[in-house]
Amino acid sequence: MRYAEVSKAERIRIYDVARVAGVSVATASKALNDTGRMTEATRMRVKQTAAALGFRPNAMARALTRQRSFTVGLLTNDTYGRFTLPVMAGINEALVDQGVSVFLCGIEDDATLARTHVDAMLDKQVDGIIATGKRIDRRLPVDLSNLPVPVVYAFTQGPEDAVTLVSDDDQGARAAISHLLALGRRRLVHVTGPESFASAQNRAKAFRDLAGEGAPILHGDWSEAWGHAAVARLWAEAGVFDAVFCGNDQIARGVVDALRERGLVVPRDVAVIGFDNWEIVSAATRPPLTTIDMNLKELGREAGRLILELAEGKTVEPGVRTLPCRLVMRQSCGGATGAVRAEGEALQEV
Image (cartoon, rainbow, N blue to C red; front, side, top):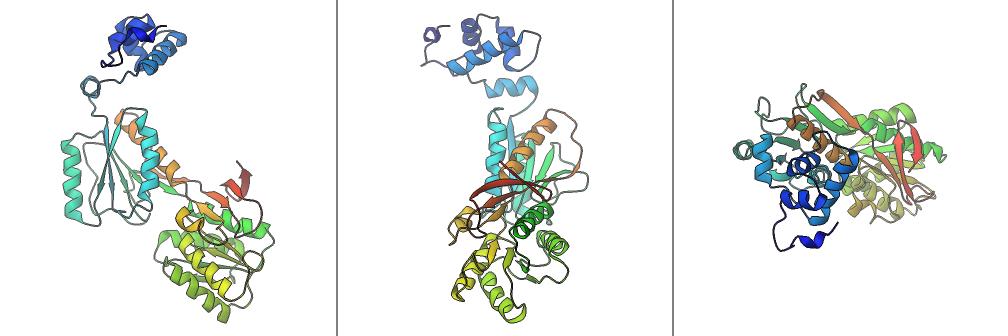
């Protein structure tokens, strides 16, 4: 196969792919679109030729042929990006190889702005919309039901008849607590965020189930300051404890600092584990935090895959789908450094 026959200065057309691969234009088109009947060897040869030549299908032609725009809208009120950025990275990974572009629109919590962005997406004839946010128990300030395009919800609350993806807080919390118990820690406490958050409720319930009804649970802000203040309160009220399961990494960092100020060594005296695996916090804590990763990038990949299926007219069952979290081991609990995927309460090395 001689690719030099085609000038790189010119835009590569499907005719060029067909000629170099030694097939008809119709066969080349069917091979690249995974349609038609041909041997797998022929289909693979056409695809390899297209890749080697740098062939890029004309997006407008594909849209006209398949009645699609090959664009997806991403709507979020998480303008800080703590949750949206990893979700978007996963969405991009799922869609880029399909030639689909993603348009991100930040809406804060402004209903008027949200409606404006949705109207703009519909004007651009997006193939679908992915809605994402900063908590799983609140909806975006815009009604996305009855739109002429499919909608998938990721890390935000969706209607009962929608496709919604969230991280499994219960499973993640059980993985964290099981890890502490497996290390021989028995006097556990839980410091977490506001009780009004569904995530805080789910993680606290898992803690209560495994650590026992009498194990202390303290609710406060999602902040380092609260983690620091919680240690002072525990010091005065809870007596001796040898492990702290924290509702997020910021709280955990505050807990670690407060323990150090009291002369305690983490993890020798007290093991600390966080939740989120927000690396600018977890990796920078001293010692670095063992924590639960919510697998937001994988959640984004799944959202991208599902919106494609819906855009192609495939049937996707509605309902809430929970994706498993990962236990990421660093030094704050002791033990080896690495990552494991937690399935239920069992830990499996990857």
